[in-house]
Length: 257
Image (cartoon, rainbow, N blue to C red; front, top):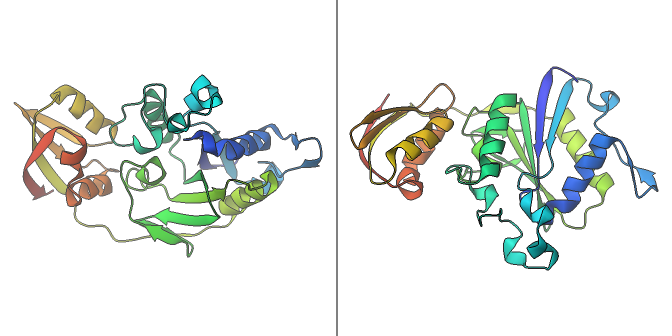
């Protein structure tokens, strides 16, 4: 229960189950299979940190009969067929909204996203570089990237092999928390955008406000400005034509704030 907050998130897909189970055991300070203990989130390991864990960001597949019957198309979906991991921008899933709100409530100093993969790898989405890890251009719709553009907590994405042992996963997570340094890249000047709305203007404006944007309504138009912590996200949406892609709007004007 240190003063620095770290949030660890996994479980967007049922394929992440091994990681989810490991994190739960680490929290409960148990022994895996009663054979050997695995490292835990103990004060001796992480005295400066308060660790919060979301082991199942998309809990539905972990309790679904479709998954139990082996219907793999549902492995990454919620109960309404929404792929939660890629719903960070539109927030259509109830699980997406809960995750998004929780991150903003906790306001962690570090976020670690763990996903099942073919091999070990560590990346970090721009604009914050962590150590010498490879960087990726952030996708605002992908939860593993999204928060690097919103509120700016540094994010580490740890890809874990599907056959990784719990001890390996636990050791890697603890080291990532204990040993890291960050460097923030320079950002572009903030932008302001006016869009013509073709869909539900109230719903669209409410979602944009959830992301920290300052939104004004003028008839069938929205004037969208960045808040204190959403400048990078708005610039990324404008630079990559993603506002029109994800929302039923048409850009009419763009200005520097």
